[in-house]
Image (tube, rainbow, N blue to C red; front, side):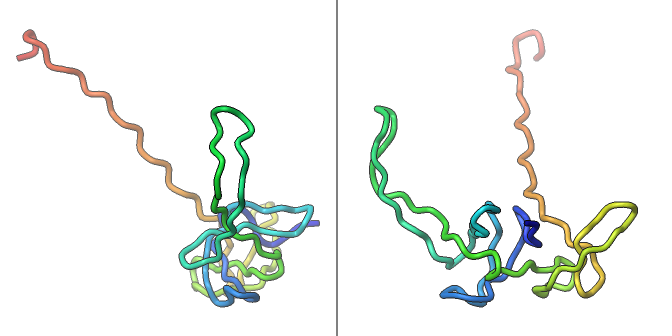
Length: 126
């Protein structure tokens, strides 16, 4: 089944304990119809883990909470409102469209710039 929410979408939670809060989708579980949302002041699930290998650590791990896919709504980048997604063909490609007519694009996280390597100055360079 296809869903209108994709990974790295900015979404609003419309049902449940975190109703009205915003966050970013970290992962989508298509089989169970759930999404993992990470954001400020959102629920965090705590899980106890055992050390399976000598290098692993045992303890309580905090993981982002999962929500049913019907409880989240994508937010349009141009109008800034949560929207129901329409599908349309633009330039021969099937895209997701907002009510305002803008194409919904997943927000890409900017990659960090690569560090430049500085050479040490030698006596010849001075």
